[in-house]
Image 1 (cartoon, rainbow, N blue to C red):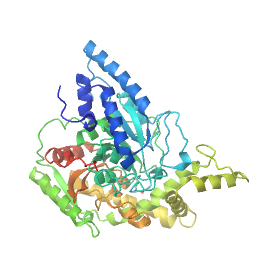
Image 2 (image 1 turned 60 degrees about the vertical axis):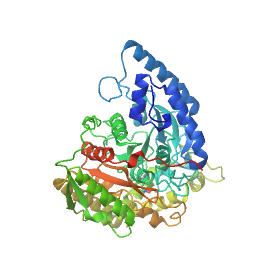
Image 3 (image 1 turned 180 degrees about the horizontal axis):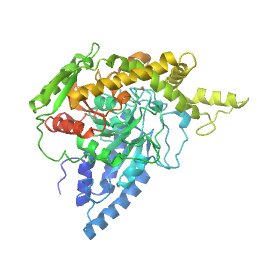
Image 4 (image 1 turned 90 degrees about the vertical axis):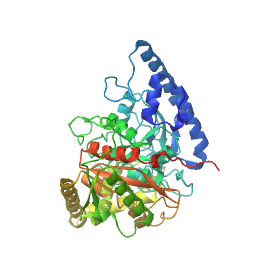
Length: 507
Ligand code: GLN
């Protein structure tokens, strides 16, 4: 059978289909991806660990299962939810190094976890494995997912495949770069304040942040627990829906997951009808701000016009507290981080500084050496915001503003079905450009901080280019209305060509 593209370029849903038909084998597919990794990594550095041997072993086993299924006529279906429980059988997965993988080093991009090998899989990994996927490697993040460029990793920077001098975004920059360069089939990232959507925007890939509580955080190294969510990072919208369908759902080990069954997000994307008649699309005034790159604004306005041409009704809306999202996030996230990171003391995990003195000297030296500058900055910010005397003025106040931000969205979603904006105010910036100026770096997140504060889902997908540099469209929905968001995203994707472009990595 003729395959339309090189194996490493396949999406997960297409790969699963070809595997099921016997048109390709999992070993072939895994080999192709590993070869691509070998070829690209010297330039890109998306991965911290590549589990080549393990991946090939598991691919072999998947091929046996696929062959058995074909013999007995018990075909594993590629369509999720049709009975057979392995929609990803034989498909390799690329995982952000913040998510625990049993027996495979998991560093969170930090030197303080350089020798940490989890003894269990995160729930999301368990679910993906149960769906038939196998691990191919772990990707480079900003340390503890703190950053917007992947420059804060303790293990070197990741380069943007569209321009190697530029950042891939962050903190899931390794996953995003791997998707853009076809160094993987699908990936998982984590999004606390934009870390799935902003790098997707900067690499012309798809990144979906689910509603808070939709996906289990068990086994995910914590940054800010009231904001952290795991999300699919993929090459198209359909894969985002497929992977979300696999990882979503209640988990008894994470009491913040909701108890309602997760829908099959692929349903509704099968219709082939891209009309959006009756869909009310809101354009929040506050998401077109000064400081936003002109070409980003033009691209997003064009995308809105495109949605209108598909039949959507466009409404101007207001989210009046938007300007407070950044200060609110940068109080609450560091506050939670300062508590979560207290566990890294050289006793429970990771390396221990070998110094003379008492236990406090050891802890001080371990943390002093193990944490990078951004992590230390966050711990100090967070500790300050939580300290007696400042708690009311900062932490408590920020919690109140968080409620106002959530109310803005509630009111907007009384008028419209989805909201659209840019995912990043600028196209990918140069490596080093913002590295010395934390405030400039924090501004890279202006459009992706309010949604986690409100607990709502949002997706970024390819929407255009400026001088060859990617620009992403963000679509948001009310909490647990991922289907609506995916419907609009899919219609946009299927009637535009941006997602088909690939970076030129030769030369
Ligand atoms: N860039 C934001 C930060 O540095 C968001 C990071 C994230 O979503 N993990 O906190």
